[in-house]
Amino acid sequence: MKNLFTHFLDVIFPFLMALLGFSSCSGILDVPCEYGCPNSDFKTVLNVSDESGKPIQGIQIISNYKYPNDSELNKSDTLYTDSNGMAGKTVNLITVPDRVGFTFNDVDGDENGGNFTSVSISDSDIVRTKKSSGWYEGEFTVTVNEVLKKDTK
Image 1 (cartoon, helix red, strand yellow):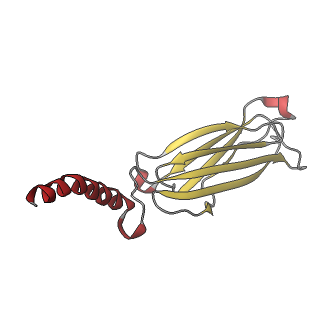
Image 2 (cartoon, rainbow, N blue to C red):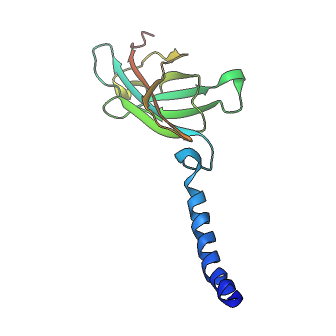
């Protein structure tokens, strides 16, 4: 009888332990276990045109991501408008910036229809466009439609 009981334990016990191990991986209170660091997608959509509404190609746009307390996360990025006067980029960031500034520069002179005056925007509205949960915080978008004036110099 003792041999039958120990044989039963030798066969069934590892099977039960394996089942318990798998069931513990489901998370606490049906919340999935996640490893990593918080992140979000940050999308920039920029449209540049002249005073008549015509798109301007070749405008350099420097975007400045600003975080609280002038943190080390502050960074800049440079984009150029295409033939439709549009520029944009989606980046995955650890945290969403507090504000984003843009500087629009005409770097190619008369090639795009004239010299245009540089413009700086220090603060743009950041809008949450997709919600999520867990480590992924969703998608945030900043959209700027800028009209540049011809330089009269």
